[in-house]
Length: 253
Ligand code: NAD
Image (tube, rainbow, N blue to C red):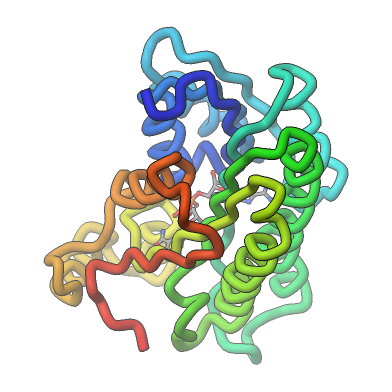
């Protein structure tokens, strides 16, 4: 049991990758704090956990700074500590700068970047006192190599990658490892609803995308959850400040 009794906070736990993370960590004995704005989907995640898993659901909006801070504090109040924080929640904002409204820009920064800043700051306070902890942020390959037509999203993910490296350097001596996972396309609601909104059949679009990946398919959420589990585990004890690209060798530059 890689995470036996490790207090693990997962944001976006109702989404595609978040659900896979929750199941992966629960399978290794973690005690989970599952956060999401969508009460229904996070409840569905909880219902899919192995029998006997200890978990708490914390429903709220990560755009609210007070919620970000209280999420971490609630985990510590309830379970006495926080061992692992996984900042997975995110939104994708499509369109060039000319198509990006002020509201799109503010929301993207709030969810994808500021929430990561606030949850990390709260968690690092507790982890510094404990002199141990691991944080994994979910960025994107687009945060490393900019792609076309999504400047707000890409900038937010590049900032998360940069923040990850900053925090890793500043807090390694406190016994805290901070890393990021950078997926390319993953078969989740985020990807599929994007296709549906643009009038494509999601199954057919995924089939076509599969052909563009040297490993033969886009990622499933479990592929990403396994990498996150590695980075959060003691097996990655000497890995800090990494931005692990999980792309199936698909070149995105
Ligand atoms: P998803 O849409 O399936 O899940 C995202 C979850 O975040 C949802 O459950 C949603 O309710 C939650 N969320 C969104 N805004 C929130 C808010 N303001 N407050 C609280 N919760 C909120 O997406 P996913 O594909 O599982 O993405 C997870 C992470 O992976 C994101 O950070 C995303 O940017 C990143 N990512 C995804 C892909 C992909 O192709 N799917 C590729 C690279 C990176």
